[in-house]
Image 1 (spheres, rainbow, N blue to C red):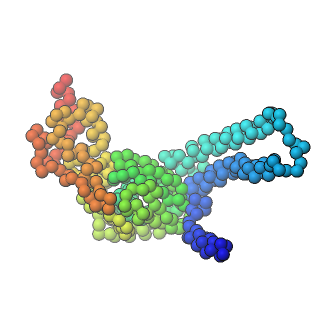
Image 2 (cartoon, rainbow, N blue to C red):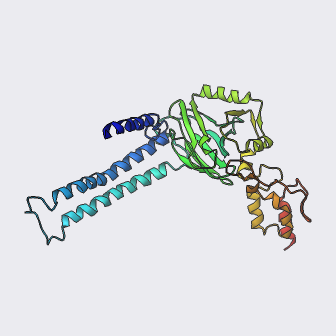
Image 3 (tube, helix red, strand yellow):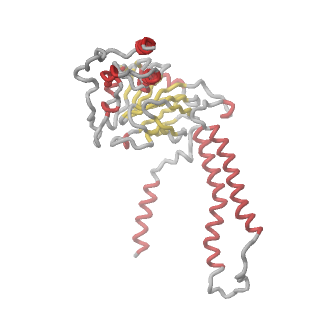
Length: 360
């Protein structure tokens, strides 16, 4: 009865696992293959310890149980064995040393900020392609600065050409991951990270956000299309045929939290958009992060700067509730306080610098 009850459970478990994708163990990119090799090497080295320990955990209790018939090997005064100490300490030390060497080699080789080298990959590769990545709530924006196009929830790349990614986030921190191509890196608001990948062969690969970022997290995935150069050129032309352009105003509309977005294309992109997204200053009149840091270095805005508080605020306008609905405050106050700058003015570094010099 118990066996007949367990069989359906086991069959159900096997059926559920049959839909799993083992991209980590069957990679389609050089970076992912190197990461797979490090994973296999580390596992095999650790098994040198794990397998004997499991064996001894079973063999020792059976071999030296109290009710055994042969007690000739019973040694109540035994306390030390030099040869045993060599084994117990020497083997783990050697394993850790070997594992440390491999970890050092692969950590340098797979540094996400390090560009891919044809000599290291071991074959000829094409010219790199530049892609700027922005994680939004809850969708992915891919900007192609050289091609002048952009897409939402679809990353198209030529196969056998390095992919140089610059990444940032519009709001909360999340993680960019394409398991078949390798690498996983955080995207963070106000910061830029980098990742270098390559697709060894043509195909469609699943990409996702691997870090919980709110109620729409489960739908925050995309398809990575690796294709030949001719097909990639056609994809670019398809994007250029779109009637939508990614201006700063269009980006602010796209930035509004949404779930399960369809693929979308933009035929043109504001040349400064990615830098403004990273600087948290896409909104008109907002002060960018680099300007803000420069102002702080020069002493800040003083009491007069209190009236310009709305030009430095960012998170408040993008706050959401547990269902993803915006609950932020208005981006600008109804009326500027006394002594503030006029609405729409952008704080100038030169004006602050002049004020600082005048006060010397």
